[in-house]
Image 1 (tube, helix red, strand yellow):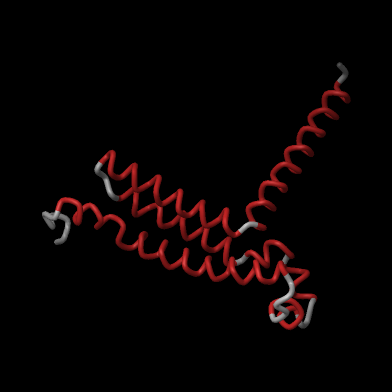
Image 2 (cartoon, one colour):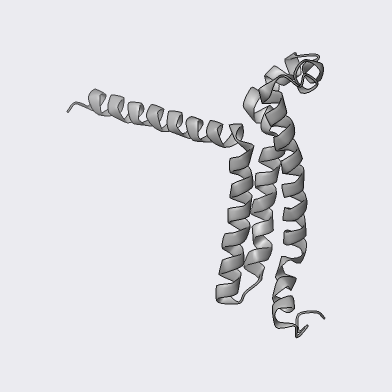
Length: 144
């Protein structure tokens, strides 16, 4: 193959990869339930790792990842529509969020509501997740 054909094939692979990444990210943003399951799976996985290794700082660190999922869920409308589209519309709140017949607006409200709960739970886990090990042993050795 010539150099130009090789470069063209490499360019086509990059285009397909970008399309795949955009499709996956669009699917994640359009479904608030997927984000909720990601937060639960992240917390559960790190909880199991903490039990297995008996090192509870792993569960505490999962709170940071859960917060990222909550922030994405809360910002679903901005990620779905784009910031420029929302800023150009003067009355986007009146048009879609207050109109209860709009299915996407209802999903945005649900995602924002779930996102705030995920953010709260993630913050609590990030702040106090390492203390769960003290509850397990009931020794209180990590309470100084």
